[in-house]
Image 1 (cartoon, rainbow, N blue to C red):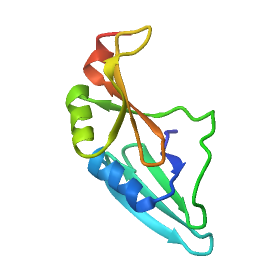
Image 2: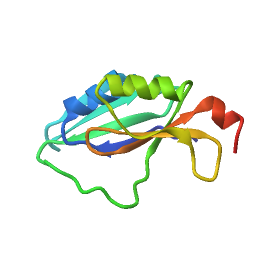
Image 3: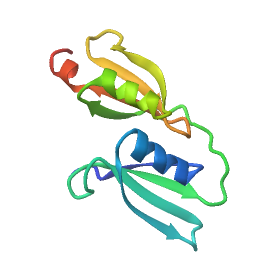
Length: 133
């Protein structure tokens, strides 16, 4: 068994695809409209669906807002240079909500960014993770 994807619901599909591809560097893998269900699915990721876990962006055509539940935490992405990554995200118009630094009660360097719908994305510095916790 393996994890195939994680799904999140998004309000503005074009804006979300732009964030995940242009700001985080993922690739748009595929999209499909489901007119009878009035929704569109878009899959984005850092590699092919056959080889990596990807993110499914679901856009329900008739919904203009969602309530964030208190059970959702975040999506985690490993990065090689967290400081450079955060600087690039900010320079491309992304929102860094927690600047890079050690996690509480540990040494792994993390940061948080927020997508257009308010979903939290944790960036984890791969080098500091190997050498800590």
